[in-house]
Length: 187
Image 1: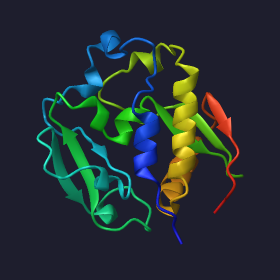
Image 2: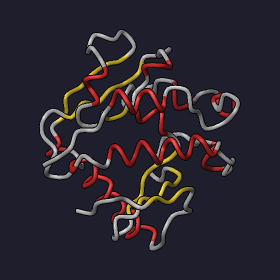
Image 3: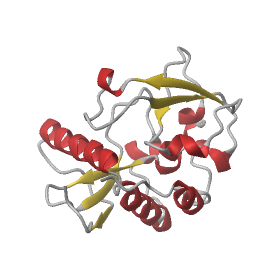
Image 4: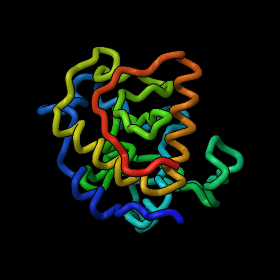
């Protein structure tokens, strides 16, 4: 049985932690916070994360996606919420994908959690990734703690596990590790 992540706790610990001491958006003109000209960019909410929103936010457009039509594990159920921002967003309410960027989880086959730079192909270049700008240690540790909580949900664990195997297959190597945590469970 899946344990649901405590989103109120996760939102509280990620509310004020940022990648740099300064606004990283100054490096790139806040490129990841600007709407894409074709209005196709957005982010998926994690299962249950939609409870952190009313659904009537004037700064978010919601779409309901069928996980069978997208690249989700078969244990994800309809609907998967895809949201597109219409800036400016209230920073304290931004979705987890924004709070955790530019970091991502990677699971080793023994269940060890690694925190790495995001490796998905983006339509923009994040200087934090491309220039390998050192990130605040407390930010990295908060992201690791957040992923430890999120990975309690079997759906999220499976998604990260599948993404990790795909990343290893495509690159043939492990990504640069920014943080390493031992998880209490392995599926």
